[in-house]
Structure formats: C-alpha cells, structure tokens
Image 1 (cartoon, rainbow, N blue to C red):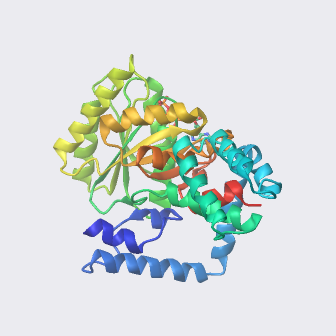
Image 2 (cartoon, rainbow, N blue to C red; image 1 turned 90 degrees about the vertical axis):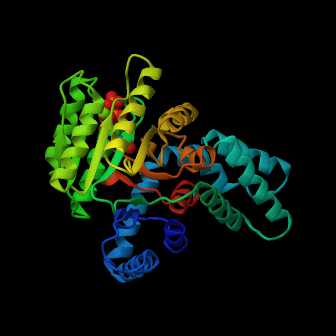
Amino acid sequence: MRWSARHKISRVPRDWNELFITGDPAAGESPAAAATDSLVGAEVAAEDPAEPQRRRGMFKRLRESLGKTRQAFSAELRSTLFDTLDEATWERLEELLIYADVGARTTAKVVGRLETEVEEGEVAGGDAISERLQELLAETATVGDGHIDISATPTVIMVAGVNGTGKTTSIGKIAWHLRQELDRTVLMGAADTFRAAAGEQLEEWARRTGAGIVRGEQGSDPGAVAYDTVAAAMSRGVDVALVDTAGRLHTQDNLLEELKKVRRVLAKQLPGAPHETLLVVDATTGQNGLRQAKLFAEAVDVTGIVLTKLDGTAKGGIALAIAEELGIPVKLIGIGETVEDLRPFDAAEFARAMIAD
Ligand SMILES: Nc1nc2c(ncn2[C@@H]2O[C@H](COP(=O)(O)OP(=O)(O)OP(=O)(O)O)[C@@H](O)[C@H]2O)c(=O)[nH]1
Ligand SMILES: [Mg+2]
C-alpha cells in the first residue's frame, strides 16, 4: 500500500521539504523508492556544514518560544524531581504534565509506562528518566502520517477552525513556504465571505507570497467561492489551492453546516478534493480547543492539525496530547508571528525543547 510503504521508511518531517510529498523527483519509480531517495537526500543535506547549525538555530528558536511551558512544566523536573523515586514522584510528574495540558489520557499512559520501566530497572538515573520521558511523549504524540501529499495537480487544501485561531495567517505562511522552498504555484480561495476584512487579509498574503486569489462579495455563498477557486486552479494548472473558511457565523451549527457544504462542493468538483483538511487550533485555549477540534473533526473529516500560538502559553503540552486524544496528527505548529514560525511538527524535537536542559 502506497501510504504505509512510504510511512515505514520516511522519517517524521523536520522541515518543509520533508513535510510535502511532491511525487516529483522519482518519475517512473515506485513511491517506496522515491521516499528512500528523499531520505538519502536528507542525509546528504545533513552533511552540509551549514545544516547542523541551521537545525540548532531552529531548535533554539523553538526552545525560546516554549519558554512559558518550559518554566511552568520542567524547572522542577529538570532539577529535583527524579532525585528520589517513590509514589510521590510519579504523582507529581502526572500533576506537572496535566498542568502543562498534556492531557489525562496521554499522561496516564506515559507515566505508567515510565514507572514500570524504572521499577524493572530498565531505566536508571535522573537524566535517563528524563530522556525516556521525552521519548515516550514523542512516541505517543506521533499518530498517523504527518506528511502533506501535494502530488495531485491541483492539490486542494481546506483550512478550518474557530475565529481567531490563525487560519488566514497559516494559509499565508504555508503559501510562502510552498512558493519559496518548493517553487509551487498557489491559489488562495477566500471562502470566508462573512467578514469583509477576511478577504482583504488574504489578499495581502497573496500579494506578499505571489499567490493568486479568488474572492467573492461579502455575504456571498462560500460554496461558490470554493467552486470558483477549484475551477480557476484547474484551468490555470495551479499546483496548490488553499481554501480559507469562516471562523465565526451566527451560530456554531451554521458554521459547521457551511463547512460541510464547502467540503461537498470541493469534493464534487474534483474527485479526491479536498486532499487535505487542516484544522487550526489555538494552543492557548487548551482543553477547550480540543473540544472544538472534536466537533470540527466530526463535521469535515480533518486530516491534520495546525496548532498555533504555542509561544503564548504555558500549556504547550497540548501539542503532545492532541494526537492521542483525537487520533489526528499535528502537522504544523505556530510558535510566533513570522513565516518561519510556522513549521512542521517533530514530536521528538518538541518534547526535547519542552523538557531538556
Ligand atoms: N503569537 C502568535 N500569534 C499567532 C500565531 N498564529 C497566528 N497568530 C496571530 O493570531 C491572530 C489571528 O490570526 P488569523 O490568521 O487572522 O486568524 P483566523 O483564524 O483567520 O481568524 P478569523 O478569520 O477571524 O476566523 C493574528 O494576529 C496572527 O498573527 C502564532 O503561532 N503565534
Ligand atoms: Mg481569517
């Protein structure tokens, strides 16, 4: 099977080139061979003298952005928590994880496993315990395939989420990376027709990134904008269409009905579309964001989460819980306002940035 074959051999995407499956380099080769090639490519890139430094810079930025979470969560863990190992240690670890919004289910699973391994003598010493904790958290947070397949032309990506979570800016940033790093053509569809400013904001991103845009009148049918976006993407041979949707309508029910309709329009017009449905969740809303995500996931078959504003919260542990709670991979995280601050989610790196010294 195409996906599992790729998944087994391709690592967790660490940058934008690894995030997107393009299908280009190995025309005529099997997907497995193509994935192996991209792995080989990544190893070659890792030998580039500038690459480790770039990665260190990226990691430093992540660590700084997670400052609030690090402070709240791991100061104690890094200093004294594992000095004595008894019942109270594991209880306190659970408290710290839950406070950082790692979530009850993930916390119970990870702490239970860690405790067993320590008791059985498989892990000894404070540093080893901390490292094992990072590994277990990363494992639990890695669900499904974290890649985004853009091998179809056009690939249609629908973006949903409640108001203010960061949908429009995330579309702008995704477009920027697709243009700059993958040299793809992009068309944006402003299917948020509810607010006048929404189309203007997207238009600004289209200008900045050199993407095209399809807009409708304020209050016009978002389904019609979705239809026009796909029609234009097909006729112009555009690589990726990014469809922005409203975050607020008169009621939540209206919102979900509208999203379902947009999705139906996309699917009807182009078989396979939307190829990806990204749900944008604001990390600062914590467990409430998770509840919203469940509603959206039921309505529109979400394939990936974009978790934004991790820089503004002490509850960054949500990034490690969301996959386990929803069964949907976190594909991108937002750790600030710049285009570089939206990045593929690497759970191992994230756990290290949150916990390690
Ligand atoms: N600090 C920080 N701010 C972010 C991040 N992602 C988005 N934002 C900011 O969040 C605000 C809302 O972003 P929008 O993209 O307009 O959100 P939206 O979901 O499109 O909002 P509506 O269209 O009103 O539903 C903007 O000021 C963004 O710059 C992030 O990762 N970190
Ligand atoms: Mg918006």
